[in-house]
Image 1 (tube, rainbow, N blue to C red):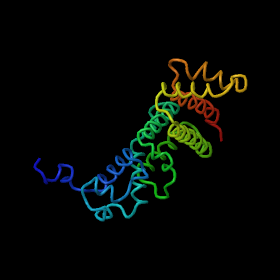
Image 2: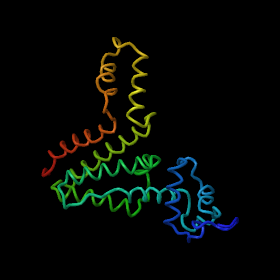
Image 3: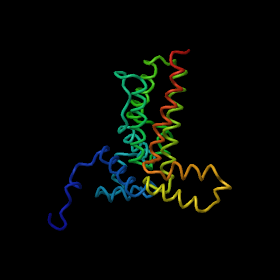
Image 4: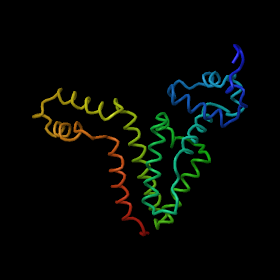
Length: 223
């Protein structure tokens, strides 16, 4: 490409979808706090003001970005048993939040949900109703699952380490800072579990999820 010639990407016609996906990529790479209309415009090779043709303001941009994340989540279907469907949806949600860590606190904060959000919510509730949950219990089941999924994702986001090896090192460093006689159960957990080969905090997600699904099974079929 000759100097001064626009890039292939900049020659691609601008549209709302491209703006939203570029914003998501920018937030993934730099953090949501550094996402501005000016920065997004620079990323797309346009003036910031031209973006307002596709999104009215920053709030609408964020709402659209959140819906992009929702579109990546596998909605539950009724062609498998409800537990399998809910489990897949939960794991898919956590994976999407791991890819877009900035989205954890935004998925349920929008007052203008997008179509992907509506499709997912409708699919979850439809799966639960089809499985025999009453309207009231379907709401209970939906609420407790999302509280757990988003809570676990937020906990993962807040952890100062990224790998099992780093976690083991951090736990061992913590253990050396206190007396095992004073905090015996913490010491035991670190030495007998966290620092053992093969331990991965991420595995706790599916363990807890299965406990919740076990409990929800008792609600199924009840009024």
